Image (tube, rainbow, N blue to C red; front, side, top):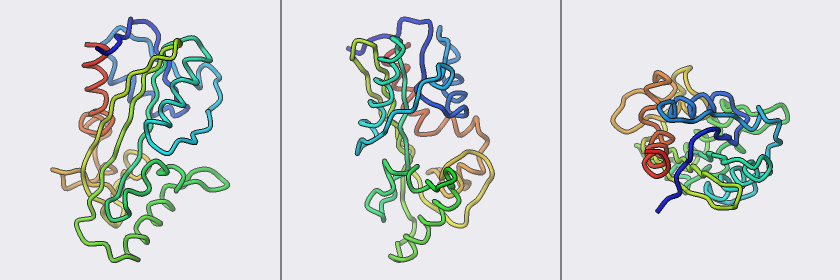
Length: 203
């Protein structure tokens, strides 16, 4: 039996304003006031886990403990079959530069690696999302979401963020980068995980 969210304020363990807006939209029908870790001035913890679940737990429990509030965190990334699941949990790391994250560089690196091994088409992949809701007493609930698809080249679209311009979800002939933001939010890996979160903790 999953633990229910009692209503009121929910601390989202993110400093990403776009992600906060997505989460607020997904929870808009419930009795919840969404705040971010950035709003509360919390530092970003070191994400040294080797799985999405480990990193999501690190973020959620750090925020819940620091503020004495229920906290929700999200860890997500793209797994590419021909690269043995890489970049996976290191999705954001592939974009790191001394001047911040450069996802065009990361997508180019991904394409070059696939070309170097002559990876067959379709280059199947999936976006994965892990949500962890943590309570100040140390309890947590974990929900996993997946959006299957394929990696394409060249990059297409100006919408979204991260690797969206090279990810074409199953059943579509456009990339996440070409898709309307709110349509993507309806079908994405994060939406899949949120449906499970809502069923478990809110509905």
